[in-house]
Image (cartoon, rainbow, N blue to C red; front, top):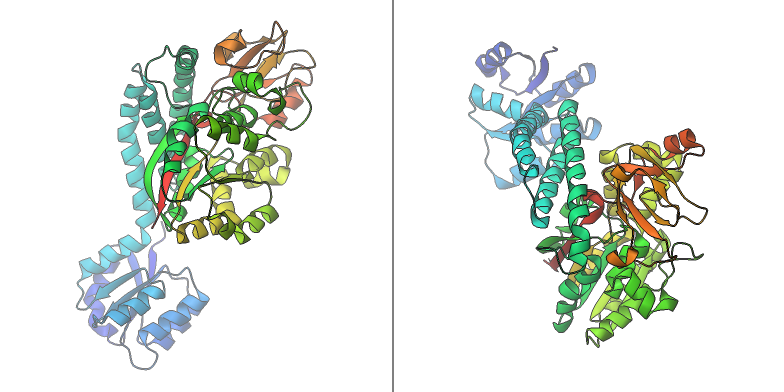
Length: 517
């Protein structure tokens, strides 16, 4: 292993020989410079891992040297050493992105600790993360072996997401594989849990049901409409819990979290069903019965989510909420920019709903476009693209303006998505829907162990298009594949992000209430 290369710059560097010998014994190679100019020359000629830099030197000062180093070698770590404790010097140094700051006199162990913090920080964090997950792995496994309630499954999923995000920054690939296996096992057991409880919950027979798509608006949004302030509801289509955790630090710059909750998407975990139910406060079969002109079934041609505003208006009437509101659906950057420019016009409304469609489009684009597949090759990259989009999207500008006006904010979604890897064969007639995670129709033939089948759609408050219509929902990370052109179909859709079925990622979704800082 190569020894760490250090450049120590100090006009009194001869006095530092005991420190240098100490560092040599610890496995570091130290070169010295007696001035800022000499340091700059040496950095030109040699590859250093870190620079120790005295702040108070004749000629080119430490801060001037620092600025020149950072201008040309922005990633080179610099540890500033000074006799002065003046606040402005510290602020200047920190503003110039130093890695650490030491006050003279320094002893060798202080320097060693600073070097380890600076150079080994990532490695040490990675090792600690791996060690901590190893300790929790067994506990999570034992928990999953119990008969869990909905709330307990939520906690398991949150823990798995937490460790997934922590291990993202670790170079321990083997540990990440262990986590993937544990997450896969969790989804297998969660699928059985949903199969055993879902119908009972919907029909008022199950214990401790979650809030579902059709109940969340009434229970969690409507109460705010009786308050003085304006409430904004931002529904980001297809936003998973892990994606929310990725963008949370940015949102937290402007808002404080009052309550972070989750709720359950209904089945199918698809926009047509889940989001219409969200706004209507009704299950799909109830929407079809009450508002036949506002509902379109799978077999019908045309957009399936064109009447959300009307459904929400009817819902508000039933709730007795006679309030002024707006509904805005953003499907491209230009529309987001336009809303950002006109957000002040919405401040007189009691309720403003913004449906933002980017993340859903990203998941579909990843399936259809090779370049997006390359950019979002795995879960970590998929999250990274989500973060990058949010940082540069009009949505962030919109949230800043909402915060400036001291409005309440709710961030939520309609369903999540899962990366699918394993095919499961299905056969149906020409009218069967094309979704890879659920099928609806007659004459369906499928692998029974892979699915949750609902023979009578009325049991799950789903429309029944034919006498023999049934719904089947694929579990875990599987996807439906037709026998015709099977190999091509499987290779095309494997490792894409899909939704509509049963998984932790699709069903356990964020609902976050925030207040402007």
